[in-house]
Length: 272
Image (cartoon, rainbow, N blue to C red; front, side):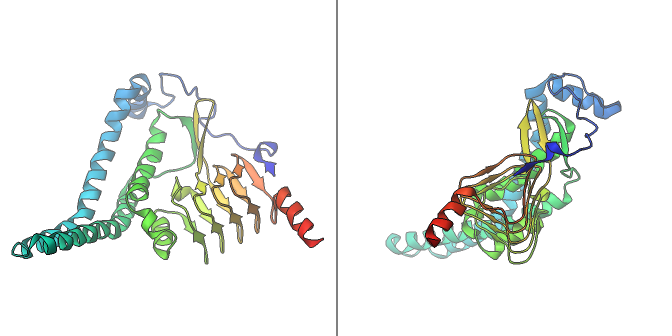
């Protein structure tokens, strides 16, 4: 496994920024707003994220509306029934309402993500910076679906559709058997990639006070094992195998066809 640090790599414009500074390197209005964000970190950041919470309320409320309608209709249709009959019917209606919410939210959230003017891009800087806000917004929207419904459609074509709508580049024949994904729009899965159960894919990492957002690419026919972790700024080669629970650190380049040594040893022993 190689490391990208061994290659000549162009530094990003903000690579020398002090992540703990209370002053912004930007000028004008952006610089003023970022200085407030850095100087009054907790209060300013909560204020900056309030619109995100408001957006989440709107999205979840809209998604819940069809289910509420169905439940209300059944509720008013069954008052004459005996409780022993009515309550099971209302229970079924409530669960139907939840699934209507789920099938609605997987389309509403990508729409809001598409309409969002703050697009996530690669960057390296402070957690308390204007550049970090798109990262928070994109993942906040993603996590609404992840923590309220996504498990019910994983792995199915619907979770592939959802991730595509969130900006992930996904090839043909891809299998995603996990919901532990962050920074979807910074991830590319080529044809016939398999992501094992409960694996973690995240196109970011923290280091020395910096938040670094960088792309994650998994090439054709690669397999990511159960509960493995793939971090940002990595490139998994074609046909490579990442074993269960293995961690691929940032800036790693996994060569094509790579197999873990323990697996190779086990296969060779079985041939004897």
